Image (tube, rainbow, N blue to C red; front, side):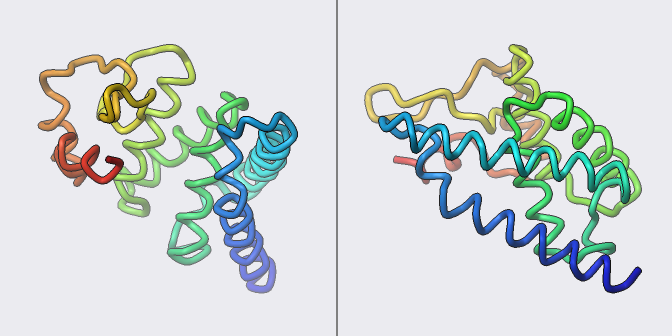
Length: 166
């Protein structure tokens, strides 16, 4: 079992590394690059689904900090696999409640899933685009409370967050 977990940790971190290498193609003008990105994230999403079915949420306690963060990244980018995102969100919520995962990453996944469902986000973590040089978030459920809600999960105020993109 220990060997399986070590192999799982390596597999997850390898998936995140491949994700980082190819993420630049997500919004590429070249159709082939976009397709390669979609195929990669779909393959990773499928594999995360198998991992969650076997192990539950891959927490830092189970696979280590880096691999746990990698699992979150894979879930975050499984945009065309809402079933995988929703399952990851559910398992991650349980892990956060149990103190085995961080609320900050959960907030990002929560927003990402809601945006993919066509609903307003809660924490304003997902950026729809750029207008006049400033990042614009996808619509939020309670825009007037975004910074207050962000603070509850350890995310900097929205203005500070978007300043990093400009």
